[in-house]
Length: 364
Image (tube, rainbow, N blue to C red; front, side, top):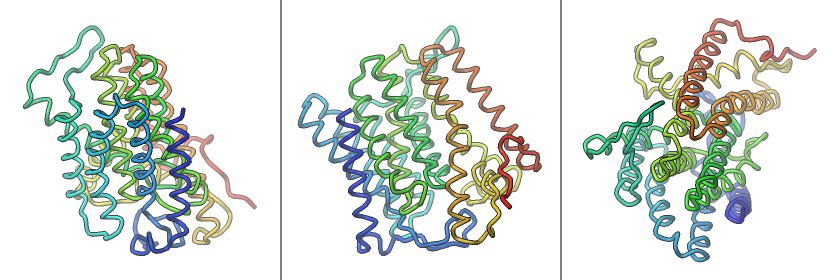
């Protein structure tokens, strides 16, 4: 818990400093209120990832000093993550780093992790057997695509106050819990560091978005989440590979479904942003309030009330993954159930037939 508390306090204080010190975020203000994915009505700094990264770096340094045996893993992990972080934070400040370049940098970070941390996909479990992947030409691209994909997926679900933060905190705590069960102290400490830093940022991001996670924060947290999930599963054969698949299924399937929707349904580039993600549809078609749709206070209120829907939905994957982390066939069944539930819910909302328990009626 020391790692969690240290990261939490450091991140909360550093985030407050970033909010108060305008010189730190002057060029990184999000003031484009007309973009398709924007749901705020005032200028907000989008460099929350800076405080999270610095808090984790501080925690890594102190943990390496207290437990020198972890230095050989914590420092390379932070070094790899910093490559993914740089692409995002530069985009936050300049707006000139394309999605393709950010993805390439994250893939480079995963490539570094492959060689420096031995973080690689070398097996895939099945109900009564396991496929051993022994060839670099197969494990290398699979590893790079998996880790970079998770980092990009976290960036995609970062659409409302507290949404990506709470979802990733739950996933990181799950990683910590399972790491504790298998006595993997490195993954436990690293997961608690990132979870604590994200929680410290969340204090200022939810319910009122005083600062945004930004691309830097999303790519950094997403990379750490993907890398730690991979390390936990591959370092501990008793943990099913389907644990990681189910744990990360919400952002992963959101991304895959978005690519399918943009390319095959709408005939557009998969990199082109749109406003019909599941969280966007819930915001527009379910969370309804009496005050005018463009009035600032009503917009902020609806923003904060959207995220809890997705928190609960993501827990449909996180909780069973945490409970059944070693039972492959059970995890596979829950993966299928989650995918079916996602598609069913999405179609219902698109057709204006959202389940009644989800609908918030307008106030008089």
